[in-house]
Structure formats: C-alpha cells, structure tokens
Length: 291
Image (cartoon, rainbow, N blue to C red; front, side):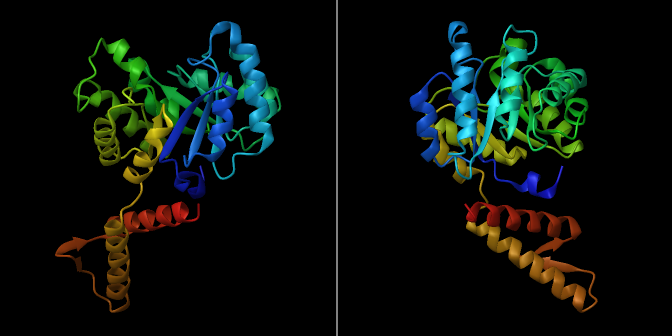
C-alpha cells in the first residue's frame, strides 16, 4: 500500500443506507472523509435489488467530491453477495466493504470475484473484522492481499459473539480491539474503529473517539451525521501536536547538521522514531488542510 493511501484522511467514515435516496443525496454535502453506502444491515431483504441499483448509480455519478466512496456488500454466504460484488465492480467505487471476513480465503474469494467482474484496479477491499476468529487471525486477513487496504472493526457483532455488555470504556472489547490493531499495523494497513450506537450521547461518543485515537485507530465508523464533526476533530492532529512536530523536526535536523547525536525538545529525548512520527503528523495535517 502506498504512503498516500495510508495518509489519506479517514477520520470519519459514515454509513449511509443504500435504500434511502434522500440519505444518499444528503451525503454529498456532509463533511465526512469517507462514506459507506450500505447494502447490508440497513436494507430490508425485499429492498436489496433496488438499493443495489441506487447505490451503483450514486457511485457512478461522481458527485461526492473529495469523499472516499465505498459500497458495503452483503456478507459472503448470503443470497445477495455475488450480485452485490458484480454491481460494485461495475460501479467502480473507491472500495468494497465486505462484512464477516475472518480468513485470508474470504479475501481471496472477494478479490477473484471483483477481478472477474472487471473492477478497476483502484477499487480496494475493506475487510470488516467482527468475530473472535477474525480478531485472532487479523494479521493474516490484513496481509492477504495488496488490494485489501483497510480493516473495519465490527464492534457490535464482536460484542454479540463474546456475549459482552456495552459499557463505558469498552473493557470487554479491549483485547479484540488490540489484536485487530496489531494485525493491521503488522501488515501495514489502515484500521477504523467501530460505531457508537447512542446517537444522543455525544459526550460518550466523543470519549470513545478519544479512546480510539489514543489506541492508534486511523478513524471511526459512524451511524449519524451529527457524529461527523466531533469525530473529525478527535482524529485530527491538534495545533499543539502540529507545533511540537515542527519543533522536533527542526531540532533534529539542526543537531544532525552540527554533528550532534543527542537532541531534546521540551525536555524530552528525541530519536529517529519521534521524527518519523512527527513527519506523519504533519503529512496528515496537510492532507486534512487540503480538503
């Protein structure tokens, strides 16, 4: 995966119901970094075919500006999966989001289906990891294909599989979150945190965004437009982070020019790893500012 793909802002990734034409239209003006046009959970069985046509037309319209536009297909093994993949391949979204991915074999099958249907090379695979098996095999899933660029946490399904309760701080899910994050980073892939279900609880939502950012997630999947702006803020570098990153790079470069091997910034020892992280922060800030 290229550096550009890794550093593309994916702070806020909003699910939009594929059967709702008004929602698809509204998505064109929302300040979200990415959209998941959904054919799965938000669409009733008897509306799947119409939603598929509507979503494919929305993607082909090219009317979503800078937003990364993806299609979530129905899960492998469902009656709609194969036709969803064919329609998505023809529409050519930025990515196809695949639920219930818990093995490299599932990734390979999706990749073959997309290629057989003529999907453009730029259409990536985003794999949803949402079962205990997926947590344990997250690295293998993430590394299964160069076409797979993003892991998406399915925390609702994971909690169901674990028989876990939803509690502030998500203690029952922390092991799974950590395993998936480790797997994604080991494979050099992007990873998105799961959704927050209570759209009225903005304080709880913001706290979970902060937790996800502290863990190392690149962004968060969302279920309501009101969650977009606080999520964008939480996952963007703060002005203080940007300024400190600049100081780190300047101090390190000055020390190198003078032949000094020891550098301190704000009283802390600085090494190459800190400089690399500072450059990442500045690159992400620039990409966000470019929006």
